Image (cartoon, rainbow, N blue to C red; front, side):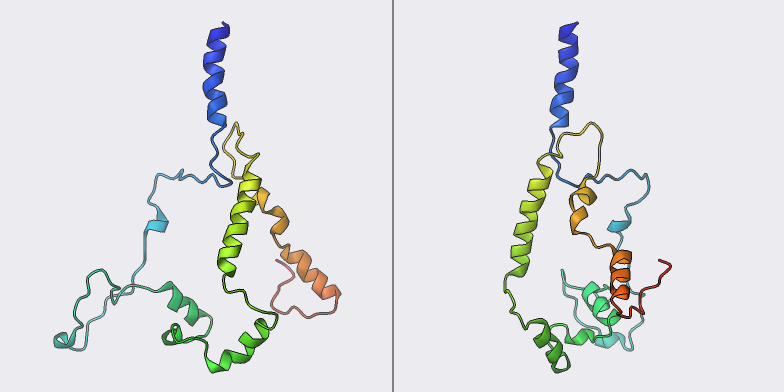
Length: 167
């Protein structure tokens, strides 16, 4: 009887030691994966079929969407200026935002510190009997309470017109 119990408990204990990190995301749907679909612009008939651009295999298509350009347009910018650098009209904003200095490698530093944070937080989350997503638990102290922050600013006398009180 002890051997049977050991044969059952050993694989169970070893299976619980699998460390998959903080995220445990699974596709439980039987339907299509909506993240694999990429919407395209509608096809348009060119003004002249003789003046079509030459095909460039492996490059962007005329009907391909650009998330960067769509984001720039959504925030009121001009997509054609995406690679042109900072426009002169935004110079004062950039100067004010960088008044305390700008770290050139901030993305690398943040990625490295976040990787260390996730490794430290995932150290004791590898022992699980059931599959649980621990991401929100690990980052709980770093999240912002939007309602609490809005009420704090309102108590201080600041106007918050874009924040609806019923949210």
